[in-house]
Image 1 (cartoon, rainbow, N blue to C red):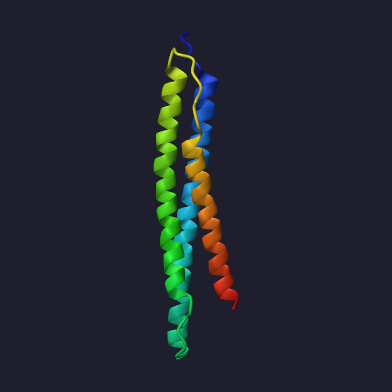
Image 2: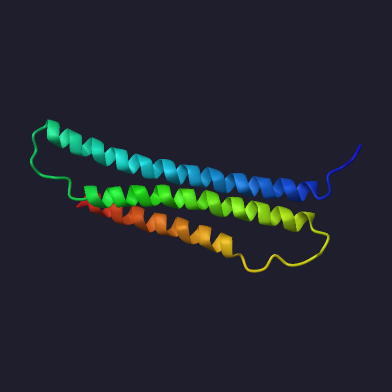
Length: 126
């Protein structure tokens, strides 16, 4: 029975890829939720005949759209990383992976999402 060379490495690569995909989907869903919740709050204000506009509605739209965009970029980055690592595993040449640029990019994207959420929540409190 033929065995796949580096099977455990390929499986670890796939698990890492799927973890980034789950994170990206959660980020996109949360961005969508922020956007839709802001629309819901604006509608309730309209129904209740309140003339005060939701002060952070514009910012919430930016935060929501940014999080969805970051999720999409995260999927692209994770996919590129997955195939790059896969090619390295299959390669006969032993070499280092080099600097973790994609991992750094993904970490920065999640940090930006966190900062946006802090500003969004801070705007909701006041």
